[in-house]
Image (cartoon, rainbow, N blue to C red; front, side, top):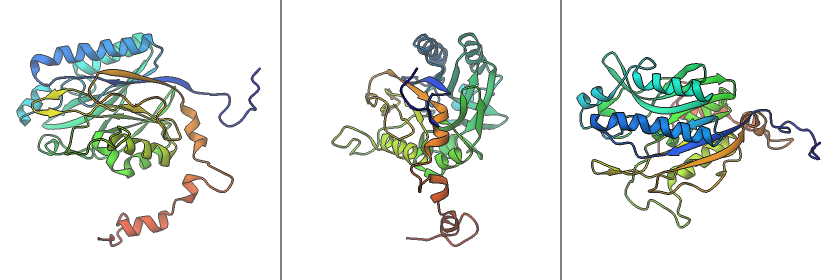
Length: 302
């Protein structure tokens, strides 16, 4: 028997090995089949290491830097009935794993930068990126909701890349009961300084901060490499409910996979920090909403 006293978090009730895959997909129809095959090989390799939840980057099947809307249409697929989601679903069923991955989604004449959640039972759901970065505004339609999905391993929320700069996204997912947030990314190199003296980038700190203030683990998978003159930042990470990375942050330029063993149910009690402090009760929504203009008040302008 364990010497550890029984508590709200002991023994673990939803122990899950998770993986964040840092890879280098490339845009261009001539590369799409190889991109998809690479994702299948990555999921299979992660499952062989015991991962039950595998997170791939944003637009993992197509690459990122579309020159025109017409090119984006050529790469995009319907979700969930397109060939890429179908291939991911077949593999998830075979390996008994959950896969989160970014894909260019076509829905009639609209295009979305979408993250999909697929499990052993097939397609579970999708999230369409709500905060579009730079030229994405010229290609994609923004999404309009923040779903959280019930699964056998826990409640899973999704976000995409630039979303992490907006604290409301992680807050809304957590308020809806997310046990883990899966963040699919194509964080790019921006004007310096890119890294602090510790070698960390702002995207990593924003991920840690969102994880910490919401007491929820985040599995953040970014890509690396260069594409049509743009460069991607790497620095994937997995955080625990305390916000700290569970291991070292991934390299800025090399493909690699991070693993962590998380008790996803721990997030349900982690918001209680002491007898007198817990995050949901301490929030002053009576002040935030009118000051920020969320409920029709006049926003504070600086």
